Amino acid sequence: MTYAIIETGGKQLRVEPGRFYDIELLHVEPEQNVTIDKVLFVNHDGEISIGQPLVEGATVQGTVMRHFRDRKIIVYKMQPKKKTRKKRGHRQEKTRLMIDAISMNGSVLASVSKAEEAPVSAETAPEAPATEAPATEAPATEAPATQESSETAAE
Image (cartoon, rainbow, N blue to C red; front, side, top):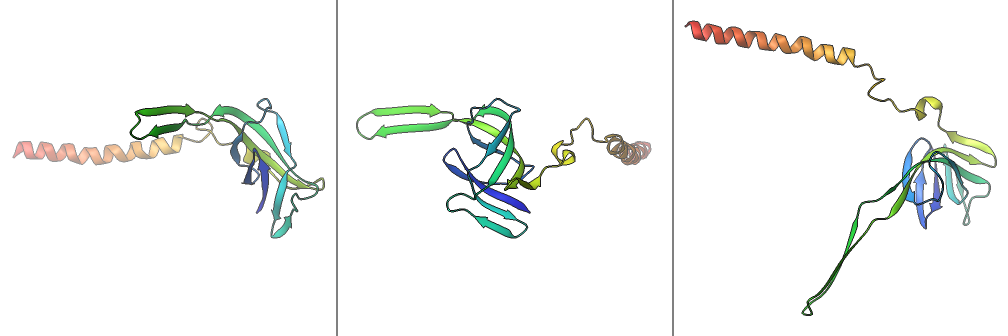
């Protein structure tokens, strides 16, 4: 398993190819590629590269999926016995970043294949066998219940 620890937005983050992460706002349009060269650590199948402070020649490529605002953080300040209260809210701007590849000195250590990249949606999943199985079981359980009720009515 290949992963890297990168620094972005003043925070350190462990990233793997094929996963998305919510990071501080990047001023890049959605669907554009981003290369992050502040890589602090790389692990490729047990082979570890530790930077001092950065790993030389290591980069992480990603694609910006979308920009959004995080949930609201409430800041409440109160001074006791003074009847002074301040309630303020703040929503941080975030960017959802899909990690495409981790590379070292120009060679790609790990990347996402096209099959893994396209998630399976509900429309493309085979639903016919799943809907047929419960439909055949449901009438079988309902039929004896109606026969029992007719038998009890006849007695």
